[in-house]
Amino acid sequence: MTTETSRLPIEAEFVSTSSLKHQLLQSFQTSKEYRHAFVEESIRSGLAAQTRTIREMRKMDPKAFAEQLGKKVSWIYRLEDPNAPAPTIASLLEVAKAFDVDLQVRFRPFSERLDDLSRLSAKSFTVPSFEEELSDLEQNAETESKLANLIMNTIGRSSSTERPAYRSIQETNLVCITDFRRQRIASESTSNKTMNVAYTSDSTREWKGAVNGR
Image 1: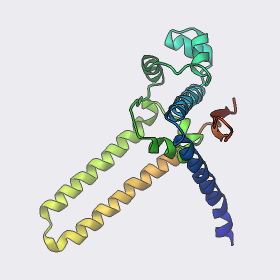
Image 2: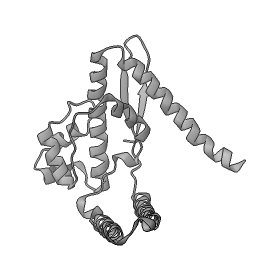
Image 3: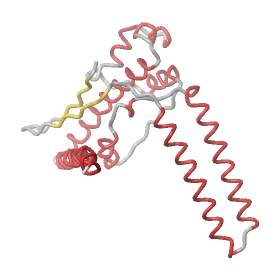
Image 4: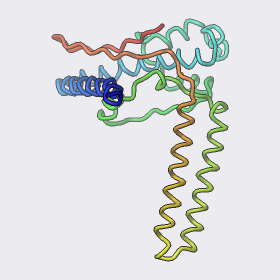
């Protein structure tokens, strides 16, 4: 009984997300204009929310962040305003450098945009700096290097009859790496910011991304 009860919220969330994705897909089919208006809106809202979340994780107020970037405070307010025009790539590169994080800008299929709905959470807006994740990166690289050496050594000295033993060693080490990554992710601090995606089906089928917890 306990197991079934604990599964209900997850199942309800899955149904809700699936329904939203289905509705959104139907809207995407109405017109090319709608699809790309949705992309623009979600990019503006997502960047604004993530910028504010990371800045607050660094415990910087808008004034301190503006000074670090050599900008006016009004520039920061526009950057964190979901209703303002999307920042340029040059501006995003400046912000990424200030946060000491990576930046990814690429074209992709709409299927990935739909999949984003199932990954949207408070944690999805938090990004550690390079220094903050350096210890984990080094440990992970060392673990994977040891695994690669073990695999190569095992391949070099194993005969066909020893292959099952090699696969067992490989699978065991892969599980260790997976557990390590899972523990690292579980230990990361999360922000209390969330993005609630609201879908409204009216005559114009408008979509709005609303950021709560400001």
